[in-house]
Image (tube, rainbow, N blue to C red; front, side, top):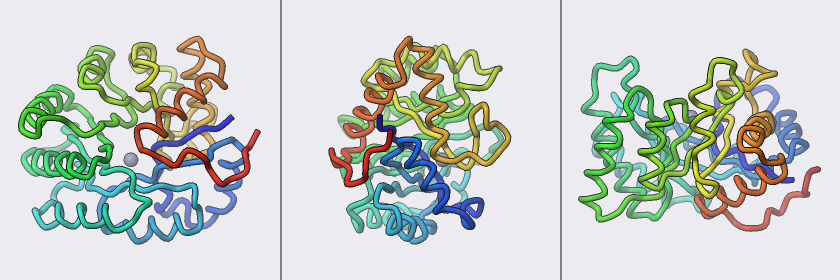
Length: 268
Ligand SMILES: [Zn+2]
């Protein structure tokens, strides 16, 4: 059984001491490919260095909406150039809108729209972060779709909104990725979303080092724990773990256009 963790941040300090042990555990858990997200382009060199050590790692490049104060037009060009500089880049992001605690919306809109354009031009998916902004996001996507006559493949990462909101994203043909939040006691609304995403649009992730699933909640999260996410999602959808692993792995291969066969040994 193989799993793909579609959203990790391994360059953060919390992994600097024991990445080899963390990697051993993800391999034993059956995680044979991972997508490394990017909060700001300055991280890209560190991400490449980790991918040099771990060939199962694929990369995204982009600017997170909570770092939007850094946004300039030149940064858009930098993201586009970095995305073309390394074959391991399979996505743009993470980008999106986060109005939970923010005053400055205009830079978030500018950065998001430009990154959607880059993803569309390069035919790569865009990894989207959306918090307290679902309405505005749907609006932006409709506008951009009109302007570009299409949208890039969109991945809603770490979905934690309502089932009604997720329906609007499913209508826009989104992939929807679920994290350890699905295992939290209070996350009934998120489990409703898990139940309604089409089978060919479902993805799983850890968003590590954040959001460790039950029974690891409160600890540092790591890619091996994506198995707990898979187990809970499988249970909600009435599938075996193997069926769910197969489905989400195929979806990730298709969405990120990952190479079909991994050179890594297959874990049990
Ligand atoms: Zn992230």
